[in-house]
Amino acid sequence: MNYFLSNIPERTQKPRSSGFTMVMDKGLSLRQVEDFLEVSGQYTDIVKLGWATSYVTSNLTEKLKLYRDAGIPVYFGGTLFEAFIIRGQFDDYRRTLDKYQMDYAEVSDGSITIDHDEKCNYIKELSKQVTVISEVGSKDVEKIFAPYKWIRLMNAELEAGSWKVIAEARESGNVGIYRDSGEVRQGLVDEILTQIPEEKIIWEAPQKAQQVWFIKLIGANVNLGNIAPAEVIPLETIRLGLRSDTFDFFLNQ
Image (cartoon, rainbow, N blue to C red):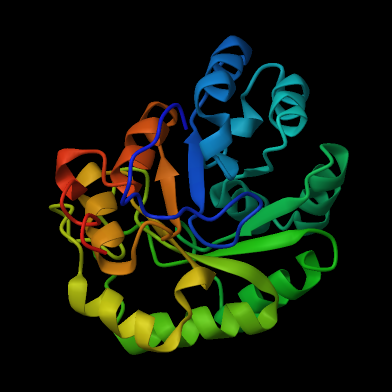
């Protein structure tokens, strides 16, 4: 840091398994990636190329190299996995991961329906090849899961080989663990945390109010995802109690 302040919460150091910031790249240019890495790379743990944007991204190999050279893992969004699966192209998906030298992959079923045992089999198979992050929850606002089902699905996917599970919210933050207004389903989150270790969950939290809520619930080192590139520095100040939303929260801890 540039100067000393007392009563700043201690942040875990990279590479870390808690206090994780997952950033969503929705189509940054190579120059934008370079600028992003200069400003926010030290606070970014992993980057997701949102949904299936990698299919239409120019200079994809060059973009992946920029992230890797900065020491930041990158992976394709889960919707790309689903696009391959629904077309019966799982082996093609695996070859695509190899072609682009991917170390991580996301397994999700937010846009299509996959039998959960089958989904867990995909996780098992892919975990032999890459580190798997799986996503629980639907992108359909009409599909609301009971807490026990979230817990059951998360546990099963972790047992199948997922490194971490993502709690679905979309890039907009208005489905899954949130109401359509963006408000957190507090009872759901509380129930999940009674059974699933907090360090195993990445909470998608694209909105500032959602980030603040989770930081106040779990602490500065909560895992948060779907963070916009321009919001990484603002999020770090929220984590450290250096923004009005959490300004008093850490002073007496």
